[in-house]
Amino acid sequence: MPHFDRNNYPVEQSLGHLIALINQLKDRILERHLSDHELTAAQFKVVLLMNRRFASTPAELCRALSLDSGAMTRMLDRLETKGLLRRERSSTDRRQVQLVLTDRGQALGERVPEIAADSMNELTECLSAAEVSEFQRILTKMLSAADALPQPRGDA
Amino acid sequence: MPHFDRNNYPVEQSLGHLIALINQLKDRILERHLSDHELTAAQFKVVLLMNRRFASTPAELCRALSLDSGAMTRMLDRLETKGLLRRERSSTDRRQVQLVLTDRGQALGERVPEIAADSMNELTECLSAAEVSEFQRILTKMLSAADALPQPRGDA
DNA sequence: ACCCATTATTTGCCTAGGCAGTTATCCTCC
DNA sequence: GGAGGATAACTGCCTAGGCAAATAATGGGT
Image 1 (cartoon, helix red, strand yellow):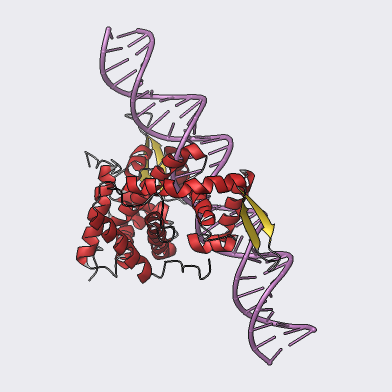
Image 2: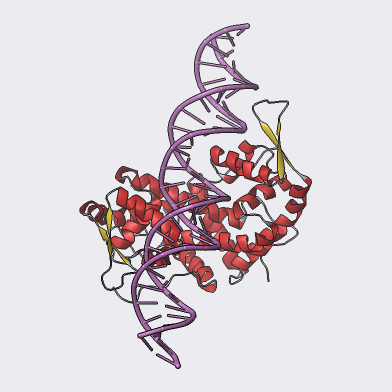
């Protein structure tokens, strides 16, 4: 049943390494497409989710991105310093911080989905449509099996 | 020809996010399997490559792992502090540093391929053999197209 | 009304990687 | 054999994420 042999693990181009490389490649392509906009790949995700109303608090961003809350605090610090968003204490639940894109953040947010699409198209340029959907299917299968897919938001 | 639409990019469970998640999941599984051995997933890669004689200098490790040389210097600092390896200035090329696993590093290195295999087996548990090889094929195809596969070492 | 578990955010401390610049060494070409 | 380009390693400075602990606020059960 196991796919890899404990006594003869293929070091070069092992599955783990391939996954690390594809993740690296994806980020490199994204960073290149984003470089004109002074956004990093990590920052881009936040702006994208906020622009599309998938998240408006730090906790929602953490859940959507499967990311640590401490890391998110500092990410938002950087975005706030860059003048892309504001923090406003929520009035209904005073534990929460409501995040609001500034005009500049909003303007950037409009462009960001196109950049994402262009980048992913570049990454998958060499694949057929069937290969792309097979790839997505396999990824989703592994992630569901490990319960590693974030739940979609109920509201919005 | 493009697979993703610029004007309607699917935010949730987009391909980019799936790739980030699978990379995260792979590292989490690996870290869990490594936790008894006081090794992180990143450190494990270095020990593995050295144990299998795929690299014996910082520059070789950088190439094999597609990793920055500054980052590697600091990684080796940590491994040296942990007493897993030693640095020795090369006598034939005095620019180079020869890396040598200590006894403890070597002992750990023996176990590491099994841990890698177990981890990757856990990750791919839910897949058929055909799915695993299709997955690897697609990954390799994308990486070759982007010229992002490190060259195998000539010697060794 | 009060205790208690849960949630939200922040902070400190750690590992980790990228980029630019520095120094030392090697190697090639003239 | 000396100049100049390439390579190896390192350093400083940055972004980025994980873990643990602190603080604040919420909400449910009694």
